[in-house]
Amino acid sequence: MKDLNLCKLKLRYEMLRAKHYANQQMREAKGRIEEKPLACLTAALGLGIVIGKLLSRH
Image (tube, rainbow, N blue to C red; front, side, top):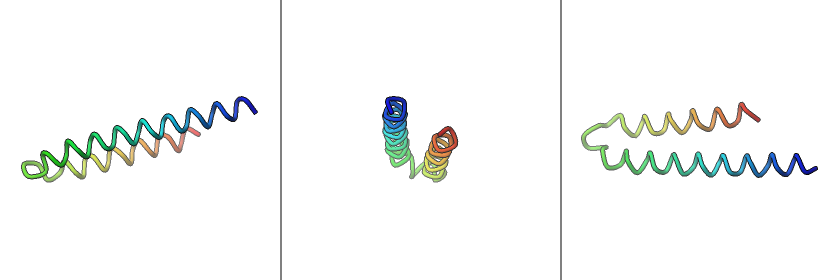
């Protein structure tokens, strides 16, 4: 039971970290969206990769 709680805690931490990273990427992309239209797409792709890695690991 202890291992399950630890796993849940780690997963929650990883999801929060991924969310923070994605928000940071989106903020940076918003600032550059006029000069680089692909920045938003790149940030969304990065978020997809992070979430995919998290889901495949557990």
